[in-house]
Length: 228
Length: 282
Image (cartoon, rainbow over all chains, first blue to last red):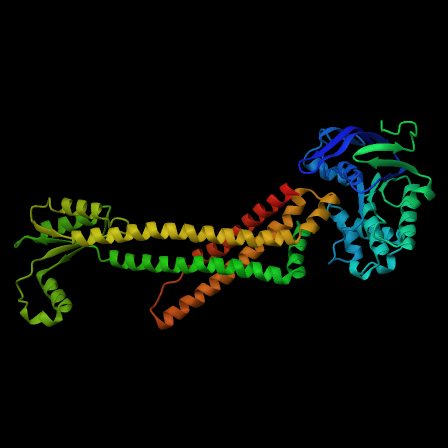
């Protein structure tokens, strides 16, 4: 479903961020992206949701290729994805409910469909009772749950999570991780970048390890440590 | 569109200070332009009043009969440049001279002033070339003894109007450019203040058109509000001038509405440029 083929990404100022990276993530799979800071984890996620484009090679999400992705198609691609960030990226002046509804409103969904869906998702992430609260009135873990609910609102085929537990304590980390596992169990793929090796070890999920822009380990293909 | 309108209105509520600052900046930029407009309108009115006095006077030879005079009057009145042609008899001329030169009224004798045809020209035909041409055509009547129209005065008046038009055009353009730059910067500030929101909108799949629409509406609303405030400020200034200095002319309804619409348009254009630039660079 997600396929990287010999992807290279260079930035004018900082040089090579990804070098010849190839891997794929199947539908419904849960995979970790690990590695030290600057290894290229966030760049991989940005390439998937088309915030960046590869310098060479191809990124494919479903049947959408980075080579032909332009203009309005970017928005269409992002509606198939759910993105969760370490800093939550919620609209501070809107309620929990409005933050989640917002992601549906931009797609032009009708009010009649928005309200029940938002309500169902807030129940799913355990925040139904706080739907009218503002993000600043919530704990870090709760804010991340709102971000996850927002990411889920368009029924994405994959959730991209960039250090979603990076700002959370251990208890909240476990809660958010379990939520992502539950979502994955319903068939949504999850690609989660993290520094939390303990979480990776305990989960036994597939791990893609990055270092200096290269894929150095893929637990699905343990015999090819220098990448495909 | 309903959502875009709601988002635009919410932007006013969410950042009232920034919105008020934007509207105030737009208002004062357009107020400066409005004051200039007021000066331009009044100079134009003064020049028009002066031009109304442009007149050609064709003196008739003594003993010219009523019939040829009436025929000439009809001909001249039919000239496309002529607004009115009036016969002034010696008695009328005497009465006018006594009226205009009161202190010398006793030196005028009943028979010293000749009859004349006084010709007033339509607006737009009061430039030196047209006035001279009409005067030349009138001299072709053999009973017209002399034609006068204050050639030098007409020429100078035309020069003043030309200078006023050119200076007004340059100043007006400068004021408009300054207003657009200031308004554009203010709106850019509003866009930057919502950069995070724009980034989030993009991540959740909003198209650039969807992101742009509320900003365009917001810009147009701020521009229209600023334009209205500028109109009120200009009107108040005009009223003060009218009360303490002189009776100044104000914009008519059409110009006033155009001013508000111009504010809306500048706000819209400023927003379009600012948001467009922002979306291209993020």
